[in-house]
Length: 508
Image (cartoon, rainbow, N blue to C red; front, side, top):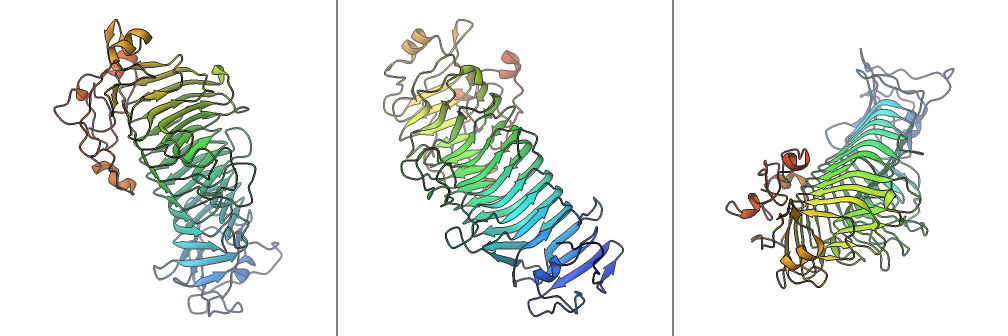
């Protein structure tokens, strides 16, 4: 957006101690001063000046401005005086960029974008770009924006740090709704917050025939990313390939990712492709957690736990206080939890703690262990696993199951053909601690199982479909995880109520 420093800059009449305020209206004139009473007309004019700390740009609310806005390294704000891009009159203006990117912040700092919408021509109508791009930048916030019509990601954050993304509605894009990525390693993107965003109907990139596309929110090559109170739905249904596939909300090759208070539902995958799941901690993820999330009616597994060949070691991750309902409907998963290790090396896939989840799968299994799933240090405590018939499929090797409740809807219990809970314990040694049986084989008596209807993460606190009844033994016969294993559980269930010390399941 900036010209060389020797170029003359228009100085508008509107000025405060914190900077200048520039106004744009579609009936303005680029020869004007850029003030409220003498507004500019075009983004081209805005790109010809340099913005400085404290400057604000106000697009006339409700109007559509054609072009692509660029902010570069010559235009930086400060912590107390950021550069602000917004709309006037309280109604969002729209930047329509046609076949190009709508907004690029490149080597920028302290830039706030709020209440402006961004639109491209469409993923199959000529646009081949990302929508809003934040690259090599820091201390950038994007709040209350709508992004649609881009073939790649609606919002793409690359090699940046201290970026706050809030209340973004990213829909009808191709590759992803929101994509976060560094360049190499896990330090490329750091300290990223994604809150109260919705990624909906991002079907896939029609030009990508070599890898997955069509995810809701995806994080890669990053450290310290929080995804909070977000929703992903109806993504991935038009990915033009077979093979791996998209996921609603997920991470790969990243460290210290927190996905919490989120909903992923009715995400899809293309015919013959894989995934299409709700949530996923994928290849190379370390020290990360998925907690207090709801997944339902996804074509892939509710929770994917994956390691692919060539990824850095996957380890030290936690899945806790989540619910999966009727996931894995179409893809190979056919289960609420799907575990796969394409590296075929247990040393590359280790130390996963899965506790206090509720997995309900009336059409399929609770857990699928792929034929390629070598692993070590996978522990399952105080979960509720409910399945149509067989509770798990595939081989459970080197895993530890303690304090879980198992229930088959068709016969009470079926574990790989073993129809007796006691026989299974005797044969495998699972669900025994210090010589005593720790697990249960009991119908949890959920009154509203299989009937999830909520679509907003803000409804999770009042979600009661899988709440354990007050008189249930599932409140008292699990394990005290802190006393037994030193596990700090956070003392919150899915609905943020304090769970009983020995409670089994996700919600109380």
